[in-house]
Image 1: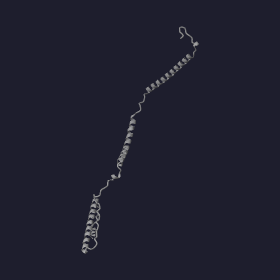
Image 2: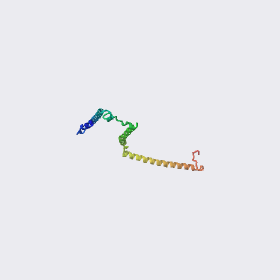
Image 3: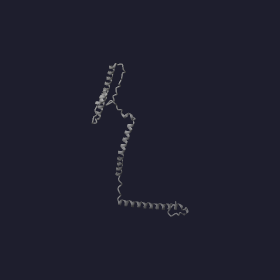
Image 4: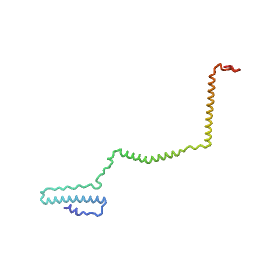
Length: 176
C-alpha cells in the first residue's frame, strides 16, 4: 500500500534532466522504494502479530541497491594488450612519420647536391684550335717515326743478308 502511494506521489518532469540530476533522482527513488518496502514489511508483521501471531512469517526480501556513482571500478584496457604491442605500434607510427617527412627532405637534399655540381666550364675556341693543332702534329710525328724505324729495320736486314765475300774493304780501313 505504501508503495502504491509512493508511486502516485512521483511526478514526471517536463524538461529532460542532465546526467547528474538524473543519477540523483534515480538514487532517491531507489532509497524511497527501499524504505517503503521496509515499512510494508513492518506493517505486515504488526498486522500478523495483531491477528494472533500464529500465522506464517512472510519475509519480504530487500531489493538490491544498484551501483550508482563512483561505486563501480572501471577496468583499464591495458590488460587486454600484450606488453610489447604498445612499444611496437609506437615505433611503427614513428617510422611511418619519419618516412613521410624524411623521404621528401632526402630527395630535396639530393637534388640540391646534383644542381650544385655544375658542368666544367667550356674551353675557349682559341685553346681548342691549339689543342687540335698539337694533336695533328703528334700524329704526323708518330707517322714519321714509324717510317724511320721501318727504314732502319730494312737496312739492318740488308746488312745481315750480305755474305762475307761481298764485303769490300775500303782502303784505310782495317777490315774488322
